Image (cartoon, rainbow over the protein chains, first blue to last red):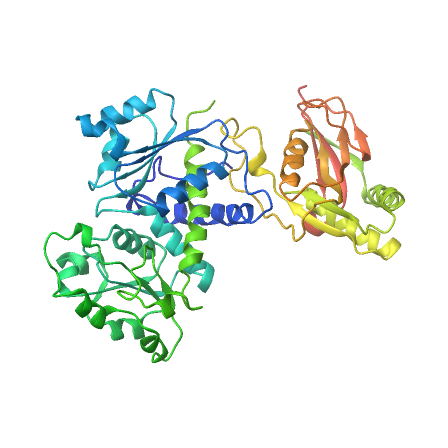
Length: 311
Length: 181
């Protein structure tokens, strides 16, 4: 009866089954009900302690995780790399083990190094939730994105989703591709040649360089931000040129023969990858994504907490 | 395993009717009252009460279904299902007289969770409890029902099941005894 997740940690979408994703969605449906009640809190995790370790900047993901944890009544401790012993030369495993000896059951971690979450799961005794590891995966973002598609369009299977922008530096893109494919959607990536990794086609993903063609193909367009902070060289001549070729405007949307759903994981660079009138239109579900983020993270944490050793 | 019928369909109907009259007596026109069934099986009782009160008194009582999974006290302690049933509460309970209903009152732990869950929809003016079957002498918590369909004395190894016409094809209450007790 107690059929939980197949995985012990949430390291990436790659390690989840389709059934896991559906289980997370169903649980999130209930939590979405909870966060819309007058009292938005349940006592389920009152004996669980969670550490949020952010070795890289984050506003909304951190806030969303914190809110999810608090609405589940977990005790939480926060840690940011800026103010930590990491700067004094401590290793990741040492840092985390020190925190765990204070009896922490679960670790939510964002780290600039791809694979950091997987590494941690092998060396420390706690449930690990990957909140973004470098350019690798950002599983909760992909879960909330696909959940938002399911909410708007009824289901994910059979839908055509175009991920547009800086694919190369985006963990959101990779996690989304895995999640969408596991749920039976067709995926296309679109952007300048320099921002699309060469082996994309091996993932069974369509590659397109023309924004208008991508938009007329898809049901959903997920617009990604240009990750200037991860770009060591110039991948395109100028932001202005990028905007002219890949910026989504109301005019382009109106010229399509159908109404597509527009998504954005945030933070938005208004006027670069998406104009304000698109971001604020009814076609955009950007703020729904943020709301769903809390419900999805509650579901993930709740289902993983159920796997912590019995009291 | 031997089974014994506690209520057959005729007795079942009489009991439900009596419970409805008791509610009508205490809640008059139900203008400020709401019946909340505890998921999964309490909702059948809530729906039946709504139906019969409508038939007997012509009043449409506000009813809801409440899931208590996230409010249980045995998370990580038992193999109880993780995934909740639906909560259908299209009203808030602020200032209302709530009647919490369930099919079987046993340890009282579900009701304890139900009280907490109800309060997340506001502060009701009062909460009453109705159980179709009250398994006496088996409470883990100091919780008693205000309205009882029938009291049953059953030991721990025995099971009481309530069948509903709409899902099980018949209204009936059965006691299951294991033979080697």
